[in-house]
Amino acid sequence: MTKLPRLLIPFLLTLLVSTVASAQIKRPGAHPKYTVEIEPHLVLDWGNHDGPGDDEGIGVGLRATIPFLDNGPIPKINNNMGIGFGLDWAHNGDACDGWRFNKKWYDDECTVDVFMAPVVVQWNFFLTPIISVFGEGGLQIERSHWEWENCDWGNDCDGSDTDVEPVFWAGGRFLFGAGSNVGGVVRLGWPYISLGVGILL
Image (cartoon, rainbow, N blue to C red):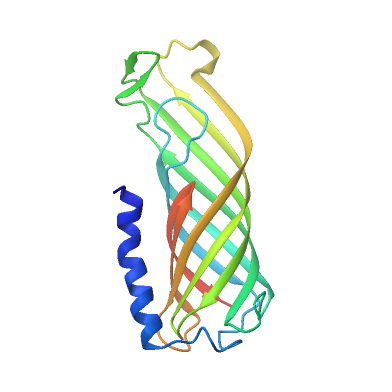
């Protein structure tokens, strides 16, 4: 069993218990009304980006999600849809330590910084007054920048690359009490995991 499914087990068990205890999913519209959700978060990036070395990194980001469908697209359950815009940054200051490429091991000093700007559609399902889950999918503009000291790649020792890539996540929102507009947000997917605080305004 890989690390990601193991991380999902307690998350899914929590959702199952809470759904049985207080099923709000069958009450359309019984969720907080908000015009935007602001979510600062921490990022654990594990995507495959261009550049030397192992470009997994940690960083910070911000997401803003604006609901455009308050009760739907399934009107008989408690759900809504929004469009999300984000900006994320992840950094790895030791990307080349123990990195193997073309049958050669590298331990040079190199850094990788990745800047990501996702645009997604978010579909929320409100299970209880406190817990909701969501799925997200869309595209992101991604810019990678790397610097590599003492390398033998010529001009590739320092460079950048920009791509447009698909992204997808599944996550949960856990409000800090019934009626609260603030809660923790966990997001699992590609190309990163995030942990943040959602503020419904």
